[in-house]
Length: 294
Image 1: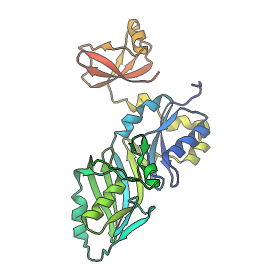
Image 2 (image 1 turned 60 degrees about the vertical axis):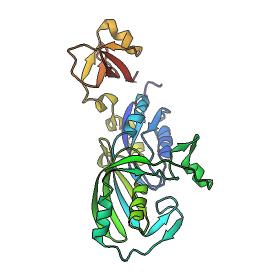
Image 3 (image 1 turned 45 degrees about the vertical axis):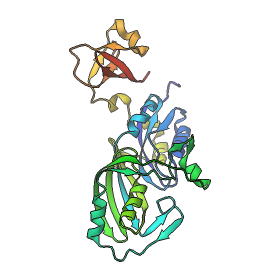
């Protein structure tokens, strides 16, 4: 990697019309760096927070993908589409004039907590090595197994039926499009997602996100926008190796767990020169490498 390569996490505001892959491709051109990845897809029509991983931070993709996320969405009742949002082909329309606000609120709140959600065909999930969305565009539908998702909270911001604006904090793997669809199905009128804004991923929120245009204009001073891996894990206990064990750390070998170490599952591990090297995981009386950042 070039000496001037960037390392860390940058909070990008993904604009409408871009895929997550588009954002990464454009950033490679702006920052003149190949080693860039994102931390989970966001639909092209959706906007909001997309943490982008630079350099040695690309190994954190699975960790950030696992984090909870917060969204603001508009549910359109009475309309069902093949994509579960308004970008798709309408498959059915139903009258919603009989719905009451109390009835809609009750059904929306019934989705709080865990429920089994069927992943949509128009998604990036893979079956047999092919993305479901690619199969869907070929006119194919394959069997999917429902997955347990968790809705931590739902707050209704505004209700002007047949539209409902709400915010939701959800666990990994939750599709807001499908949540809208499922709410509509439970109300027996159908439903789809009209708009979606991702407000937060882990500690990265929309107020701190920058657009690609801002990134380009601030390119020469972009370091201030990047959160280092060390800062991201600053809440973990810190351990330094002695000079005799530096080579073991640099090689990603196991380390002995000392009794005076603070109790934790994960540790920031530095060499004897106080250079941050890795995150190690405690297993019994050993420390094993979890993520290396050399």
